[in-house]
Length: 165
Ligand code: MG
Image 1: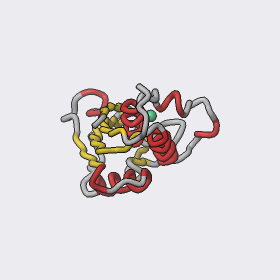
Image 2 (image 1 turned 45 degrees about the vertical axis):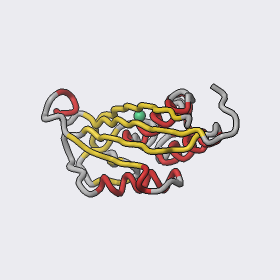
Image 3 (image 1 turned 30 degrees about the horizontal axis):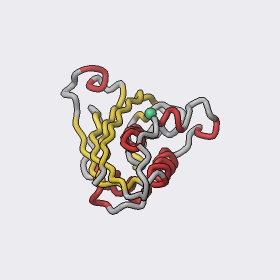
Image 4 (image 1 turned 90 degrees about the vertical axis):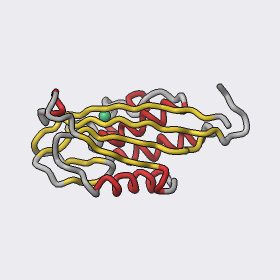
């Protein structure tokens, strides 16, 4: 079985007057993430993990933040398009596991819904995607509440007919 792993990492700044969107969930909080799109840091990390595993570059190459088409767009649009590209190259998701790093807010049971949102967006079963969360114990910029980071790994298996490299 041909399998490949990919890693994704992203950080966005927390600012007032923005919605906080994580894994497609709107989280009630006094601040939201700044970015060209909806700045869904978890979905961006997931996209990079998928792209990396399939050897398709990164999210910045696929969806440049200089392109007005992606202004304020839901990052779920990116995830759907990324997984379609990954599948078109003959790859299928085995599993994806992510961690959100945030001092606040607490994500609690919303983590499960974030995983479900991403699974639904990609058309894979819920059990293939897991989302965890941690603080950085008050250390560093994330610990000071200046932003939220996310990391993700994706494992793909090749189900296509001819493997191209
Ligand atoms: Mg990003």
